Structures are given as structure tokens and as C-alpha cells.
Image 1 (tube, helix red, strand yellow):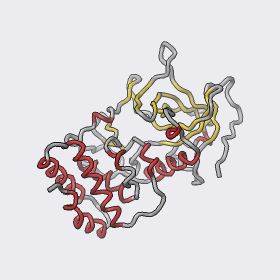
Image 2 (tube, helix red, strand yellow):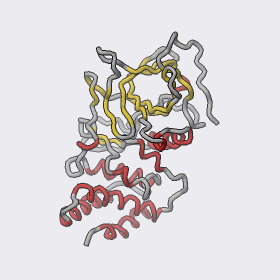
Image 3 (cartoon, one colour):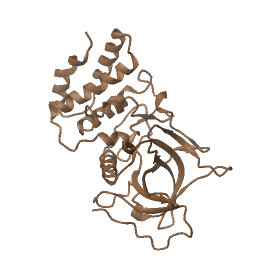
Image 4 (tube, one colour):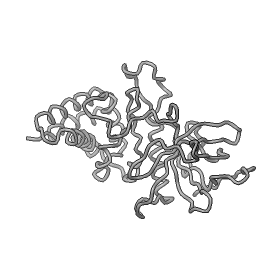
Length: 287
């Protein structure tokens, strides 16, 4: 059941009115931006009065903003607004629940040690940054759901590369295969979600990869996927990525796939899942 934000002292003539906060019934978790604790959400403007845009794509645009909590603290955030080119892209309450479910699950997955990132805080670093779904209303517009997350910016510009700058043959394959393993083992990789995998990741300019394209959440199926299916999901995801990069060279494509599978098998995982990955790995080679 949805709860409504109870703002004691709303700001005078606010730009953005908070309509509804978190869509889960989970106990408060300080790792999120729980909007029941938010007083204001603002979008930053440039010198000409236009919103500062950090990025965007087919599904929406990402704007720089600030969240002000009821205790008076303030934090810079990225606000993803969805662009309803057609009715399929309008985020309903049900869609928002899927997004929040996806966010909650990924926020529970802790990053492991990686020699490439010696300063990583083990036990604190999560698969995705602090993120939450918030329902807002701007002026007289219809209420809408937005994604509010930590902002990684410098001089008003995003520290993340565009999705199409993330190349399969140049990034940290260990971190990549670990992330695919975690997503697949959680049941988040399905036949309907495979198209999202080609541009799922965002690459921080320090080299770190994050599964930041949360539109992946649209494809979530709440039905439990058995271990054999999940193993195939993971291998299929790796195969799709190498297909995307090496479309015309079968030998390079297979070589890259084998490299990624070997990297995948180095990670800690359920031994039965590992046996299934080994059993099915050759299925995705092109003969």
C-alpha cells in the first residue's frame, strides 16, 4: 500500500511538489534517499535559466538537482525524468514498484575486492549508488515518477561516459563478468531483457562499471527462475555482448566469448551454478 509524504512546512511556491515517496514496505534504510524524509527536490538551472542536463537517451533525460531533507541537510543528486514519447514510456505506480524492487535488490549487493580499485570500501561499496523512485509534480503538470540518485559531477558535468563509449574490449572484464553473474543469479536477465544488456552499463571515468540503465527494471519477471535457466541467462548475456561488438568476425567473437567465460568462472559462486555454466558454455559458441 502506498504512503503519502507528510511535509510539515512546505516551501513557499515550490517548483516541485512531492506527491509520493518510496513504493516498498521495507524498513527505513539510510543507504537510500527515502522521500518520506525529503522536504524539497530542486532542479539546478544554468545562467540562462535552463535545467542543467547531465545526459539522456530514448527513455528520458538526466538533470542535475538537489535534495533537501527534513533535518536541513542537502545533497546534490541526479534526477532522471522519463520522456513519454508514447504511452508505453509512461511510468505507472506498478512500473515504479518494479524499479524500486530492482533498486532495493541491487543496493544489497556489495562490491568485492578488485585490484584495479584499491581504495574501494569493502562492506560499503554497493553495485549501484544511493537511488530511489520519487513521485513529483511540477507546476500544473501531471504528477510523474522520477529516479533520484547520487550525482557524480564535476564543474556541472557528469563523471560518467555515455553508454556508447563503453566498449566491450577495453574495460575491466573481471568487474563486468562479476556484475553479469550477480544480475543473472538474481533472476534479472531474461529473454525480454537481453536487448537492454548491450547498453546497460555506465562507465565512470575512473574505469569502474555500474549497471546504471535502470530501464532494465521494466523487464523484471517476479517468477523465480531455476538454477539451470539462470546459468543460461548469464552465458546468453555474455554471448550477446560479443555479438554486439564482433558482428562480422566469428573467430574474434568466439575468442572474446571464451575469454569472458574464463573470467566469469574465477568468481565466487554457488558450485552447482558453476557446474552448469561449465556444462552449457559451449552452447553459445558460433560454429
